[in-house]
Figure 1 (cartoon, rainbow, N blue to C red):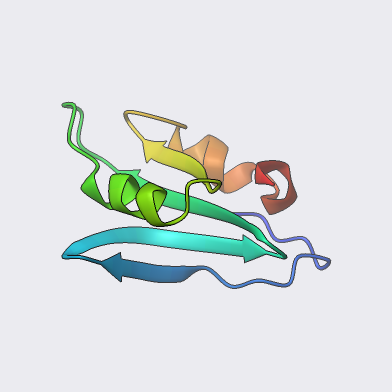
Figure 2: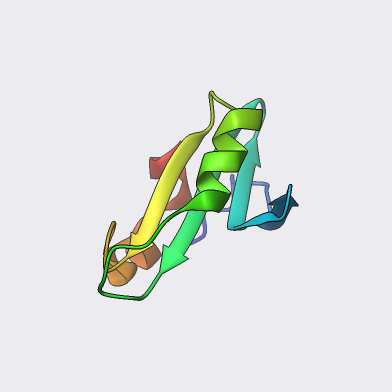
Length: 82
């Protein structure tokens, strides 16, 4: 992801109830759950589902073949996702 010096958060890994999520970004009270999938076939997303139960207001992003194209995601300023 392209970095903006005003963005002061590091991505973290999240796990809960035997489910995992690739990255979580936090800014103030806003959360963004990010799952990266490179497979072409449709897959289940149990990590995002579990995270959403615990943090229903969080924004969810799927990156890769089934969501936002990886290159587009990496070129987008972090601020745009909030």
